[in-house]
Length: 545
Ligand code: FAD
Ligand code: NAP
Image (cartoon, rainbow, N blue to C red; front, side, top):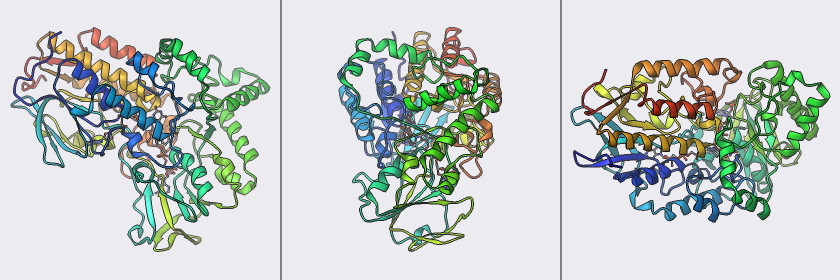
């Protein structure tokens, strides 16, 4: 294969971000003979697993699946210790990958890309960083992640707080010793639900500030038996194939029945079995209409609510912990180890922010409309400006120097979640409009990187310099993504999927909800059809429209 040549000096590709996505992009694109440089804001590789070092952090897709599939040797040589590996182990794995594939020599850490501008004269991207780098590249690949732009609530008085405060998504590398501390945790999404039980075991007292109660399923984490691991490794391809052909890119038999087709006793039996099995693919995949039909969803939601009541000793605390304002799974379901049980501990207090909102942070703690909670430290488990945030925090400009933030002011517009019209030769990994966060993200990343690498090979073979989504293809795709989302219950929740967690963010369902296999086959068809919906030209400088 002819590698695309760098005709104007500079690099072939700049990749922004060195998480699972950026590392695999570097490996694949370098394999095409391209010159690639990766810029990473953190001081090491790993992305999510570099930043999110809070107590209890671990994956919620099983490790045997939440891992790269591109190298059979890598699959065989790496052993996972638990059903869901803890953060340090995942970070070790990613570092192992960086070393094993000799990736570090093309990665510049401690460097944040501040701007990327398409120069219509040269047809190249000009990329600048906070360290003074100013480079040009034919292609720019945004591997900035879906959940890397943290959001800390703007609460009056935070700077006056006498103790330390932390965000789960930017956890100190040296760790935090909570022994003897009074800790306030704000937020009860996945990060809060994972960390609260662990913090409560160490701290003298934990106050949980809950705005919205959440559905959480038991993880049933356990050591990974060597025999189980050996069995998977004996035919790893079969597990990966099963994942690739499943809706969430996680190997699970697709549910066939609707919830209301089944007698109540039998439905209960199935939910109980799923609860006992644990994991993301448990209650969620018991029936096929849970995310489509409110009555079906209610059966699952009621089942989980009954489990909360059974687990939590104090009925009033159980009531406050019980989600009632959104259908089950319309927010990302959480997985926990002893979350609801933690509220039976003497050293844990739940504060219902719906009843008594935070008014300010004072030097000694957090003041609500009811009381001042005296604290030594505060943990913000308040999440991320998801999917669009990491992209819009970079000053990205396309044709006519138009800012991406301007083009996306009413919500993101992409073709396949991978490209956006007016921004030639810019690729987005797991961008809005792709399955991304609704799937096993490592598999979603591999699919995107492979598609982009194949596209660059095609361009080289056909001596093409530029690829750009057409406005028509993009409009059709955005409509399709919205139509699919509107046929589900997802828009009913104030979730980060909807952008609802960030004040002022347009309310748009961000990921593609048609499932990973459908999406993958659309991407493959587009490529097989000569990159239908894209304009491929010999000169990127020419506006193809
Ligand atoms: P990231 O890992 O987010 O990496 C992006 C990198 O880009 C970051 O290192 C960031 O510093 C860097 N970056 C961003 N902007 C710039 C810039 N301007 N300049 C330079 N560098 C920049 N998904 C699952 O499928 N299963 C799970 O179990 C799971 N668990 C998760 C647990 C947590 C705590 C979180 C927060 C997310 C989890 N996710 C999970 C989603 C997770 O983000 C993805 O699985 C995956 O790690 C994303 O990899 P990535 O390379 O696309 O992005
Ligand atoms: P999140 O799901 O967005 O949860 C943030 C929490 O903070 C919510 O409870 C939110 O309440 C609350 N909050 C935000 N602003 C607040 C404010 N001003 N005052 C009070 N409460 C406030 O974020 P996350 O828990 O970090 O998880 C984000 C995603 O990362 C997950 O959905 C998942 O995809 C991934 N993740 C996965 C794992 C895992 O198990 N492997 C662990 C962590 C994260 P509201 O609901 O009312 O907005």
